[in-house]
Image (cartoon, rainbow, N blue to C red):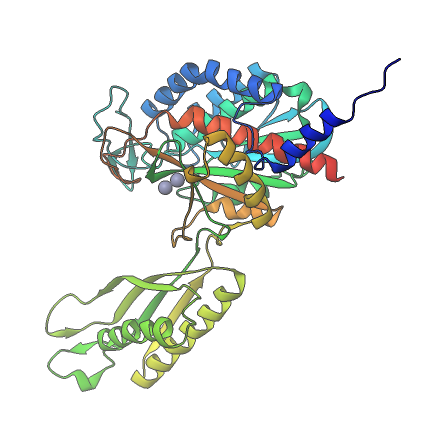
Length: 436
Ligand SMILES: [Zn+2]
Ligand SMILES: [Zn+2]
């Protein structure tokens, strides 16, 4: 029996201590990550074909019957439990993992826009529909064809590693994001009544970043979309004798100007607020004081508390000006889609994974919260939620804006999105299962 030499291990230890800290291993490093990467690469051509098919067959909100059937069929072939009929065309696919753990959900929206496509693509949409009595083209101009495809891809990849997946993942194919608050409708129709996610994930195409970049905001990401319709009333009179009646145009003009004082004089500089009177209709001739003026406005802010504060201030200003003018009025104020709040803990956790999957921290782009609206916020009322922005600007083209007829997205973003979301969800499920 020989004595174990102790000098050599001490030398090794000293070298290890002196060495710089190890960088996180390159993706994919674990056997599970390698399987996810291989499944993603294998699926990419099929997913791109699905996306081109969806792109060529866009459907408006609550009319996504073909898209919904494609999704349900795909989920069934993966062996997911499929439930349909929420918000008319909504589908959920339930994947039960082989290990115990909580429930997470991933949402992809399916609806297109009433825009005639002008993009120079072999699979450009030729679909049309009659909207407000007029025939118009339909187009996936907001990238929801990519959202739906990434949803299918993540479902396929996580199904391929099902035995190693802790807990359950609910894949939510949601209708009507653009038009009608499909998220709230799915919840109201009981989509999450007996399967309640403890975390919600989503992504949106980002028309400002190249594929391979991930935009994120911790905290508020999109705005409350509130607004009002104001009708200022008058008896009407001759324009040459305006003292004979209230002038609703003059009162309305004062309202428009005074509302901007709420933003500039009554709102803390860090409480981002927008009040836009986007529609003001009154009158039919230069020599008639009209019987009414109708104003419509959108009011944007962040967080629940601000909504009622702004409603009360706007009501005060409108009431004061109309009373001063002696005008009767109807003010109909509406709270619409609430702001999306990205849970900071979910964001932190996901960024660590995303940085590795994308190969560098530089691929993660911190973004300012937007003043646009997004109905994903409805899921945030059920559980902590987070929505990321997936770069889709093609390498060889100028960036084109979503909601424009020439919008073009880089399909390379599809496998990238699938790899990202599959790893982010798997990592979250593993952590959440361990924490229980
Ligand atoms: Zn949109
Ligand atoms: Zn969108």
